[in-house]
Length: 306
Image (tube, rainbow, N blue to C red):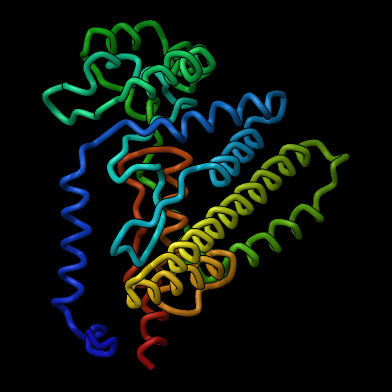
């Protein structure tokens, strides 16, 4: 199809969207333990460091090592896990959610998640032994009052939700993130570190936090660059000229954002989506949302139409 016609042809894009939708619907949900494996290795490698720095180093390791995939028809790329429909285990928060259903999760009547034998072995031999006694959930259980624990154990109250997963009811400052880009954000973090006086009580803790932010920013940049390289390699092997052009454009965009401020609507969308998937990589939850994207993406859309 002629490129100019395709741009204005709604049916063309609906067909693409429907293919993307059907691929998700027709794919069996599976447990995805890749992030948990990298997380476990990262914490082993960074033992002794402050927790906030450990988390940041481990996140960067996830960005360096996680599986990168660009599926057919995708124009905005990124995935928090390694599978199309994968249930991510955040072992540092609550490894036991999988342990409690190890024998039933693949065949339970509601919302089954297939767990293959290799992932089960990984969980039982590496993930569970390391995290047993270390998770946020176990720390929480040890601290709740006995009367509250009794009510919880008998099912009178349900208070586990915030202890077994991320909070979720969170909207990141996407407008600022997309507008500044990682380079702008990093410059502000570095300037703030320069203001600290490490002889002053409390400034060491602040420096740990700011250091962790730089590690996270570096990880996101690495992840986007990996997608850029993947798209470029896929383009070199692509026989369809239209898809080849799409992959080259994906590569160009991923090599620009989120490192730099978005300069177009599509760049803004891709930058936003990288941040969104990275939040889920760090902590799986149900309700992370992009907020009023109709407002903060509007200027980019307007500029593209000008």
